[in-house]
Amino acid sequence: MTVKAFAYLRVSGQGQIEGDGFPRQEKAIRDYAKAHGFEIIEVFKEEGVSGTLIDRPTLAELMVSLEQNGHGVKTIIIERVDRLARDLMVQETILDDFKQNGINVISATDGDLLEDDPTRKLVRQVLGAIAEYDKTMTVLKLRAARERKRKAKGKCEGRKAYGEVKPEVLDEIKRLYRKPRNGKRLSSVRIAQQMNEAGFTTATGKPFTSQIVRNIIHKA
Image (cartoon, rainbow, N blue to C red; front, side, top):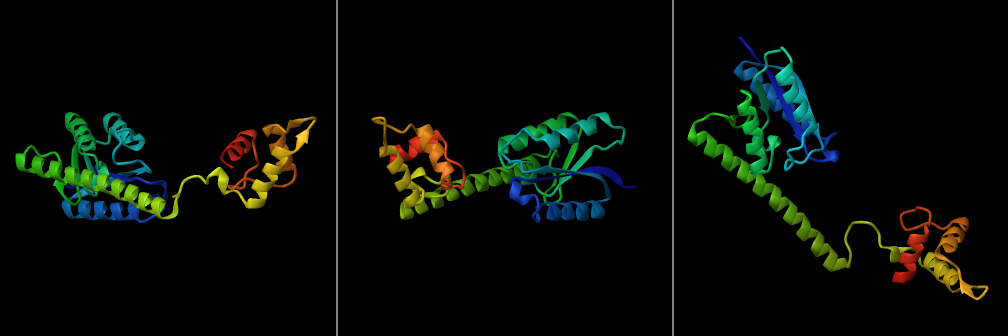
C-alpha cells in the first residue's frame, strides 16, 4: 500500500528557476518515493525565495492544502534539509510547525526529519548548522570578492556612477551649465531638457532628469 505525499521544492534565486534545481530536486524526491512506497500527488515549487526566510507563499499554500483538503496527505518529502531552510532557526521553526500539525517531513537524503530520537534530532540540527554556515560563508566570500575587485579597479558592480558618462556628454553638460542666459545659468531642468532634445542619454541609456544633471555637475 502506497502512502500519499506532497513534494516541496525550493530555489533561492530568480535565475535558478529555469535551471536544473527543480528537475534535480523532483527526481531525487520521486526516486525516494518510489523506493519507499510513497505516491507524490502534488508538487509545490517555491520560486526565488531565500532559505533564510520564513515567509514562503508556496509553503503556506501547501500547509493550507494539508489542513483543508480531504486527500489524507500527512507527509512532505524534500530533497534535503537545506531545501526546507538554510538558516537553522528558520529550519527548526518550520519543522516544529509541521510537527505540531501532525505532518511528517522526510528528506530524500537524510530520512525522517521529525523523529523524536535524540540522535536524529542532533543530526538534523547539525545538518541545519552546516547549511547555515555554508550560506553565511557564501555571502562573506561574495562580499570579499567584490571588495577585492573594488580595490583593484576602484569600483565594482552596481549602478554606474554619474561621472562615468561619456566625455562628450559631460562636456556638453558643463557647457550648458556655464552658458549664461540673461545673466543666469541654465537650470538643471532646462539642461536636462536640452540634453534630451539633442539626443544625449545617461550612462544607462535613459533620458536625463534634473536630478541626474545636478548629480553630474556636483561630481564633475
